Length: 401
Image 1 (tube, one colour):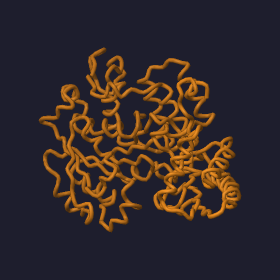
Image 2 (image 1 turned 45 degrees about the horizontal axis):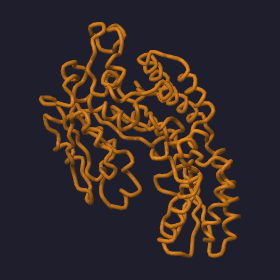
Image 3 (image 1 turned 180 degrees about the horizontal axis):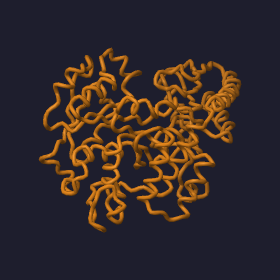
Image 4 (image 1 turned 120 degrees about the vertical axis):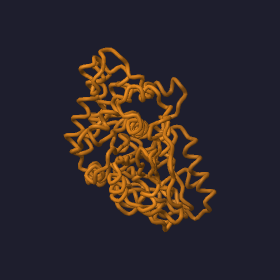
């Protein structure tokens, strides 16, 4: 912690979740070793990306794969590939898409996150279909197709949970793919946290989705990396639109036949990645697919039992364990809810008090519940074991007020 102290930055004990604003997740020894090796040794990034993609395909069964600087960037480059393809002149004109197909169809009821704005970075525009309360029908999606349509965007997180409470009808990904492919158009799926259960990595490509993006932070990889799976032709185009495509190398090594040394003018030149992020993406995926998550959950339950024993002794407090599979959209979550005989504003004050300490403890409030998440909603253990006693003592102090 010396460098944090040097900067005056407080360490965060994570009882909150796998979120970008606190850096995603921490690395296992296996992932850190792969990243350290990459940091210590130069590599031709075009080749590193190429070989990383091949390994990811071995692990997932995808036709092609690419490591991108996160899901938003992956889908932004995917949109560019759908609009400009590998035409050098069109690539160099982005984000000017005049004369190109540049519209992406989205269901209005799936726009809560606004992450589909990734489609607009390279000059695309969104065409909203349906209603956020009523939903959408497949016939409406098809009717929205014009000679300007470049593809469809599908937010995979919008099929249950908050969306279900709207009592609206969402066109499922299978039907979206059917409509799109019947009209010769691609479908891009934002599956950022569909990493656990593990069949999430085949769920959409097996249905025929053309590009599917996942965030590495949700399976223990770098916060700065995402993987893009999909059809070979589109993924190869994405590589050319990426930062490695700008200066890819000799013409004979490029996916696109080109004059040796001639640059592509990629608009995504600034979306760079370190060698370590690419290595970490692959190493974390390997580890994730080999992980026995039941063993992680067993440890999490033991930790929850210790916390329950401690906090149940505080007057006016009871606890409730939410185990794996009990929270919609959160199949890997184990969380302990501390139920307080207080109003929600007082619980919010406890959350602020915990955050204000040093180290800062991040938890959350739901009504009169103080929520301490032990695993992320994708099954990863959050706070390290060495911090358990600190959590128990600090929360106890805050509860006693």
